[in-house]
Image (tube, rainbow, N blue to C red):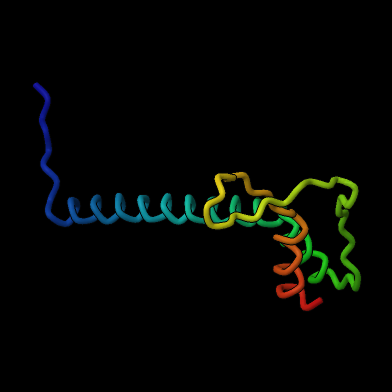
Length: 103
C-alpha cells in the first residue's frame, strides 16, 4: 500500500512561491519577446528606418518617392457620393521621420 505524504505548510508555501516565480518568469519572457517583435516591426517601417539611420550617424536619409504614379485625389465635399480615399505613403511617413530624426 502506498503511503501518501502530506506536505507541511512550509513545503506548500514554498511550492506556491516556486510556481508563482516560474509564472512571473514566463510572463516577463513573453513581454520581452513581444517588445522585440514590436521593435522589429517598427524598424521595418520608413520611420523606423529613418530613426536607425539617424542613430547610426547618417547625415542624409534617402527614400524613393514614386512621382510618376499619378492618381486623381478625391476630396470629399458636402453632398458628394465619392467614398474613395488615397494616401501618399511619403506624405504620411516623412513628417514623422523628420520630427523623430531631427532632419
